[in-house]
Amino acid sequence: MSARGYFITGTDTAAGKTHAARLLVEALKLRGLRVAVMKPVAAGIDADGMNEDVRLLMSASNVAAPLGLVNPYCFAPAIAPHLAARLEGVSMQLEVIEQAYAQLAVQADVVVVEGAGGFLVPFNDACGMDAIPQHLGLPVIMVVGLRLGCLNHALLTAEAIRARGLILAGWIANRIDPHMAATADNLASLRSILHAPCLGEIPWQGDAAEDLGNIDSLLQQVFLPRK
Ligand SMILES: Nc1ncnc2c1ncn2[C@@H]1O[C@H](COP(=O)(O)OP(=O)(O)OP(=O)(O)O)[C@@H](O)[C@H]1O
Ligand SMILES: [Mg+2]
Image (tube, rainbow, N blue to C red):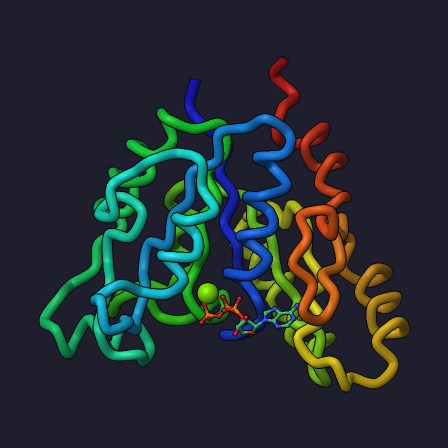
């Protein structure tokens, strides 16, 4: 059986997509699932030539997969990926990502796919990163980086997801700013206006899979209805 897949987007770059995706992978593994990971497009590499997000995601996954499938496109400059691709003379294609995803999906129960930057960051001259979940047919999980301005970013992102006919499967509240004022009130507002399940709240410096305890409702509704 082919896996369920989820596309992880965020309210912005550095909203905590990788951090939340890792915890999501851990939470799914605790439920006995084989969880593959994918970062289709990455920009920025370490001294060893690897992207940090890719390394973190691969270290969380319990499905062994070649780097080329997990991360089909990796560019050295830590800049917007379509600009990095242009600098390196690469024309990114959705079909390459689709083929890699298909190979991961046959080995896993769930594939957690992390986007790059925010939801509408350009992919190539023809489309944005939003084309990836559209092309792969994936529901989207939005990581809300809790900081001043996040209500607007979250609403715009949710609207863009739904405007493309995609399912907003849920959202994750990630406390990236320990000094944010009125956090509880902001969270309450998000809960009332997003009309999608909150899968969990990750505290500042929180690193526990249990922080995503609400994924059980998602598992029942979306992941495993076929059993
Ligand atoms: N809950 C948290 N508490 C403290 N630090 C956090 C938290 N979540 C994320 N961070 C830190 O914030 C930074 C950005 O997080 P992360 O890399 O997960 O964001 P991202 O959305 O994946 O960014 P990118 O757009 O580069 O992929 C990282 O240094 C991460 O360790
Ligand atoms: Mg990331």
